[in-house]
Image (tube, rainbow, N blue to C red; front, side):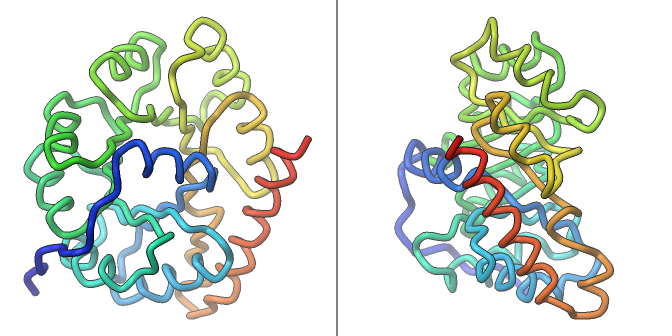
Length: 225
């Protein structure tokens, strides 16, 4: 199925980033069954998570973005994840992706996203990679894989590099999301903690909605202290 051109007006890059910072959570949808994506999107939205990315490992991901993006309410942010090259970034943007996320630092992906007027969050791990990505124009730097470090790493990076916006991904759970935000992350990327594979297989989308509500509640609680 061919993705139709995205016709809804695009937001400014800065506005998209500000909204993701406000949300505090980007849900990551990485599924083997593309038919479940719509149900997951709706469940996350009902639970209050308004920013998500569909990874390019989902079969027909570009087509799914093209089908779903135009149907979402204005306050919802729909992005493309696991983007590894400029061509994929361009195709995702044309399909309706409002932001691009990559697990790695690729200059051509940053350039492609910006050519299409949307923000990009490249994946980096070391301080050198993180600052390089920021200097190349990354709108937010995805700290990946954050599983192996923890919130203290974000705090340590923020010390000498307070200007860099960081979004740890990997190792973020419903229970520890507040620790990452208190450490200085502007948002977090969350996959399995929200998008429960067993719940999806059972079509128990109420479980995903409940996960989303808890996550949003914990984000609000962390920011109120």
